[in-house]
Amino acid sequence: MPAQDQVVIRVDDRVLTLAEFNEYFEPTRINRDEEQAQDSAVLREARLSFLLQLVEEMIILTRADELDLDVSPQELDEAVRDFKKDYSETDFEYLFLKQAISFEAWKERLKKRLLVQKVIRKELVKEDSVTPQEISDYYDKHWKEWSYGEEVRASHILLSSEDQAKSILERLQNGDDFATLARAHSVAPEAQNGGDMGYVVRGQLPQGLEKPLFDLKQGAVSRVVKTSYGFHIFKVIEKRTTSKPNIEECIEKIKQGIRKERLEAAYAPWLAKLRSRYHIEINKEVI
Image 1 (spheres, rainbow, N blue to C red):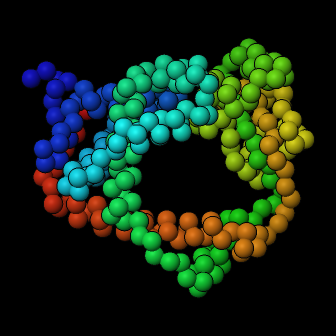
Image 2: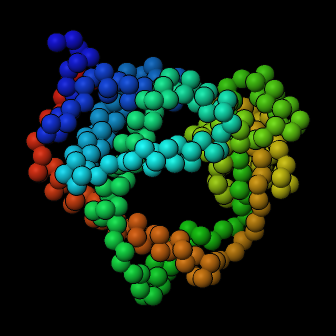
């Protein structure tokens, strides 16, 4: 049997071959920095971790078969449109070129993720009401997460060369969209979110990055900032000072947090129960 046809995972009648595993893993490998990609031990650990993720996915997909659940073409098309809305057509096509994956392969992976989410919602997400006491208790435990000192909400582009950084900065100064350029060119983890870092608290970043960021006015774009990580460009979206939020401001976050905790508590026992029902084979050696 050719190596690529060897079975890596089997869950009842559902199988994943080595060729499929490599196809799924490739975009995650490409997104790693060059040093990680060249380190065989790091790469092996990443492949094993990804293998375990796929085992969980296949268990849940097997449960989807039992529940007769599927993702309709309309649901899939809607999810694709929702994903594409933040990209120009050129940037959307570049995304697949950058990750060395075809649109059809990406779409098939998206369909599986949507189906996993559908199973989890059906099995684990309950419409239980959240009581006032639960809301109060959760707020008392978590309010510091929503309080803030001096903060900026920033977007970030990280580039590997100074020439490229200067070119991108010039495009920004000429009116090009920051988020579009971040998605297309940044090598930072938040690139696919348009460079959005969320809120950054003073004292959270190294001084070499913090000072130029916090010195910016709201809406301004920084100069190119050089560090050991590369060449950075920041844009300040919003600035705010110290405040403690009222419970009313946080009510939706609190409800979401409570439901998330309930889901997380239920997930592991549910998955363990499914594991015990299916015949599972995992061939770690071939990856």
